[in-house]
Amino acid sequence: MTITLSPARLAAAFATLALAACASTPSIPALPPSQEAYWDNLASHCGNAYAGGLASSDERDADWAGKRMVAHWAQCSPTRIAIAFHVEDAGEAEGWNRSRTWIVTRTSDGLRLKHDHRHSDGTQDAVTQYGGDTLSSGTARVQDFPVDAFSIALFEREGLDASLTNIWRVEVDPADQRAARFAYQLTRRNDPTRLFRVEFDASRNIAVPPPAWGW
Image 1: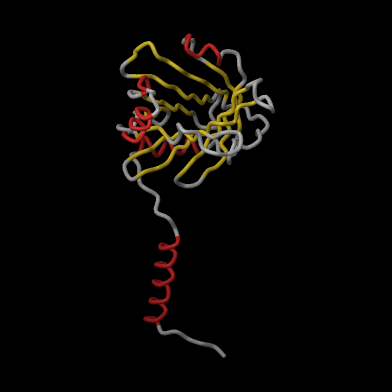
Image 2: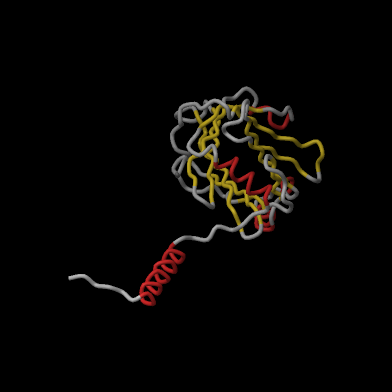
């Protein structure tokens, strides 16, 4: 038996399907053009892993010098990108510290960076989920994330007063750019001498590492 719908009922059916599709699809916050371009650059590396190392020379980071490092785009969605940060560590059972993951999220008014810190058993560290939101549109390559109120309260609670003025920077070139680079950097407004920076060769994929702890 063939069922024929009138034009009015056909239009109503299409409208119902469209509304259902909208209801099931999470909204993606719009960003300024420079941040949209930045997001595209960041997302272009999804699934990839890159080798890197310490690029700064602050004496406070002497324990990091010479250690192999890997940045792995472990999870990607239209609104969230998780980059696992693996650091060579002879003190760990498998020779690597896999406790750190950087998470960049699209929000209603910009981008957010959070740090997910776990122990080897997957449980969260006491100092985790700290970070900040962008306060400017930045550029297609560079975004800065000043410390947010949640993180300030966390740092005060844990006695980490030196971190109360943290500014994190994440730099990224598109994956198809010649000599592409990826970098993560920490500075502090109250300490112009503080610089922690790691850089990765984002033009050459390496083997994907095991998952970060707890992921």
